[in-house]
Length: 625
Image (cartoon, rainbow, N blue to C red):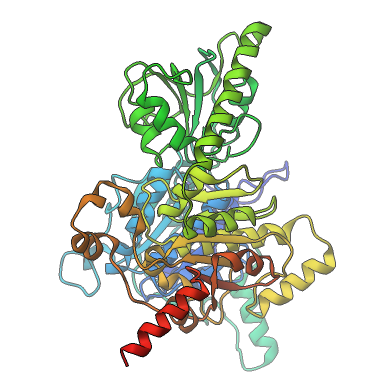
């Protein structure tokens, strides 16, 4: 039998969690223990999709033992639920979110989010309810082989057996709690990412209200006594030992060679380390918008077009001889193919994991963390040479960018970028717009997040909704007055968004990405509404393909099979799903974003048509009627 402590140790530090009071359902008993363990280990949010087999998780989370320690969010679509949870985890990976579903096809809808969590190294705890062993592979309803279905993607894969029907045994509770502890440790450990725990539940799936109430409940006093017996005191109940694993320490930096012709490449998620390395050694910083390093005196705005020119000329004075890569670069072909794939460029990757980014397979050295070789030993002559090279990069990039033609879509993207302040957070979809920003955007003080693990368009609105919910919760917790905090709580209880003024979360997407996750706009009337501005640049299809090799395809082939015009009234669709939606132009977008507001706001950006063009079209229309 696993260890069950009778009471907390004398030091006053709890060794675990209270065993659940009997509920008359072993499944609910186990669910209470699972949620209690997750809450103790730092989980603050869970996203649930409706279902019957997962009902014990609902009863357990709503029970008195949890007492609101884990915030519950409900989404009717499992894919939206999974990406909402991924967004919550992305905002603060130290507190991974849970997504929980019923059995059967519901589990398959989680796959895209699990894939993105794996490739982006974002903690995500996936709980799937299942039938017990005796109902598997015998044709039972809504039962499939879901144990191990994410095995190649997850850091931990567990299939918990169903607890005893009427009451979970101490061994079963301890096994469930121990498994959750391992799951959280694996999700947040040295190689963070998703974990999957498949939970078998045997009937009854609901608690019995008269469990252990050995009193006559004819009077109000007797009812209260029955509830007290059923719930018990957490201090009096046995403690289930909870295993805590210490978080990994940051890796020790290794020396890497530096020269005046070295550049730093900051891919998605590179973080402040990329900027610090570049600035410490006066090196050009080629930073993607979602790198977390898109600012500072070393930043080279508009580097893609310049880099294409530089790498096309073996004798170009700016041609690098070394690239130090941090994060996951995915956006720019001049970076991935021409720079990192060049035989005369020494590639050094900074990454503590074995699945480091090296798409060109030319990395000579991989280190877990980096500092410049010799660090402060460079003499003033060498430092001045680097500074001059940096200034030359910045001047050349500005000149090349200024010569590029700009489109209305790029202007809309820049309006959103420029509206992002220090307290704001910008989520970028996978489309041409993020590449527009890579070429044209200047530095930003805001936080920028994008799903660049697999660079898919799945669940982008739901992801942003999860990020917005976490942003709201963080705003309520710190940096505000008690009066404002009380107002925020009142608004949330009423199903409204947070009070304006605490920073805004915005999502910038193309029209196809928006259409691909319309269910992300479906927020039930009993649910907390994310404070989120969604900016949809509607140009009638997938513009990105026009910039790839498919641009050479016959026009009718390109239009039907690649750019795929949709013919959807996005304002009507968003309004029908409950969002506040309006159509704007690129020139009016900045003003619209500056207006204070709360809740879910959708701005559909269309191309601005001149008065002369409108008059000409009116003449054509009059001639054809």
